[in-house]
Length: 194
Image 1: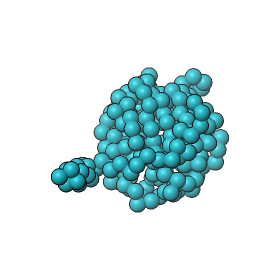
Image 2: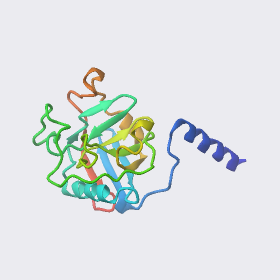
Image 3: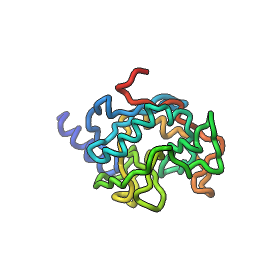
Image 4: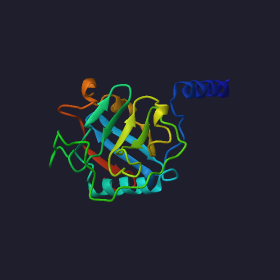
């Protein structure tokens, strides 16, 4: 009976676009983002996007993501962050330019996959050029099949999606631009010491 219940729950989750749990990721491939309401744990996917995952981990280890704003947050769509150049709310935050910058590291070639964009998927933001992802990423609030195969998937939220849901929303009339945005307080790789 328990097995049937589990199968029914997994079927329902698939029908509404919620990823089934895949088990805990290796701590070396787990990103922990501390938000105002607590931690969000992301299982990174080097099997899908090894270059992007390596860049995210390097930036986290440099402390580059600490205090970076969620500059674009669209209800029912996604929360975008990671502009280390113009989004650092302690050093150099520029609300007019947040979302237009990257990092001092080179842009990355696209690593598109067949992984679908569902609630909790983490993808790399980019400009029109598919090979322009650098440091910015977004977390999906809901499924969006239109992104499938168009943006690099780098991970999935394992825990703390309720904290993501609590991120301050942006202005729908300004493409999700957030005034006085929330931020990533600290970002680290789980295998590293606190």
